[in-house]
Image 1 (cartoon, rainbow, N blue to C red):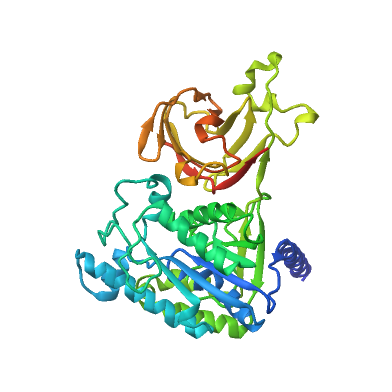
Image 2 (cartoon, rainbow, N blue to C red):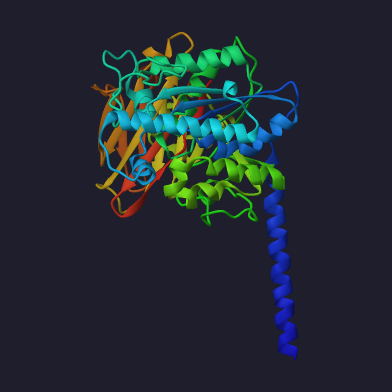
Amino acid sequence: MLKKLITILILLLLYSALGISLALAQSAYGTITAFNKDDRVLILAPHPDDETLGCAGVIQNALKAGAEVKIVYLTNGDNNEFAFIVYEKRLTFKKGEFIHMGQVRRQEAIEAMKLLGLNEDNLVFLGYPDFGTFTIFTKYWQALKPYRSMLTRSTKVPYQNDLSFGAPYVGESILSDLEKILLNYKPTQVFVAHPADVNPDHKSLYLFFQIALRNLRKQIPDPKVYPYLVHSSGWPKPRHYHPELSLEPPVNLTDSQGKWLKLDLTPLDLENKHKAVLCYKSQTESSAFYLLSFARKNELFGDYPEIELSRQVSLKERAIAFFGFSKMFTNSEEEGTLANDSLIENQGEVSYAVVDNCLLIRVEKDKELIHRFSLTLYIFGFNAKVPFSSMPKIRIVTKSNKFKVYDGKKIINPGSIRLDLTADDLVLRIPLNILGDPEFILTSVKARGEKSASGTSGFRKIVIK
């Protein structure tokens, strides 16, 4: 009897502790700003269905408040060959068939949004290449030849009913379209793909939006921006439809650097979201277990805070400044000049600093990985005095202590870029003039090691003061 009582007490204490921890976790979430009748809500979706997965509750709540809602689709989602085979029950390699799939997904989006309360007039389809927009952002500016889509083999928007019909697949086209939409609509709240989303089209939409918003900073009021996440490794779990569960952020994105906000859904909101997901038959026939995982009690939104780096001058007695981050920033007057980030997969630390007009990036690594450690670093700078199309689009690829530097599609002379590889870390020193003397940069790091899991940081915005 005594043993049973002790067991019961232990269980009660455990349940109590669990309840407290859950309550603390829930209280850590903020909430998005309530909608009102004067709001103009803009939802930027990389593909048809992303707006439903991430923002079906937002759409319903905004409409109930009397707000205006507009949805912009970057692509028509025409590059999902597996979904095509399952949905059409046939194998094809004809480009017209994939354009047909893009038209199917466009119609599915119209039906899903009608169910949530929106008319076709509230939807804007741009029709850029599915699975190609990140390549366009990184490599196709001032291009003599536009990007060519893998499956449709198109080099320009092929959909006659889309806003951008006939627009060439180059960065200027996408950026111009987003700027026109932002300038005409003047949104008060924007929901956009998360910078840590692993899908390339989701990344590129976030990047294009950041540049468009900065280009228009003197022409439109700053909207509230709420990134939503769709693709993260192994997330969300459990799979399939679980309306009784909350949607929690991925474990590897719950660090202190980003704050998560949530929007609770009513039972009717959730029911409508479930129905809207099922409108995408071309996708649910092959991936219902995944897509329905987003139909839960709440929706999540989060972003990284901007990193601000002050320009520092290294002291003579600390010549190690270029490669000695931990020794560089020890004085109190230099607090805040070193900023840290984490790799999504393995939580290795990435650090940033600006010293002697150079950007320094340090990536931690396993000690045993000396000659089998590599990384890919993207750096996109913004300078208000230079059109973004003319700014360098830098990609640095390292292998051991060797590296190559690309500007778009071209390999360029690394100049005074320096790399230092030690047992503990890899440090790159990049002169700011190589980056176009930017006011801010958008950067991401992907690290790989033969014996360790690869890790990728979400795109961070770093303001250089």
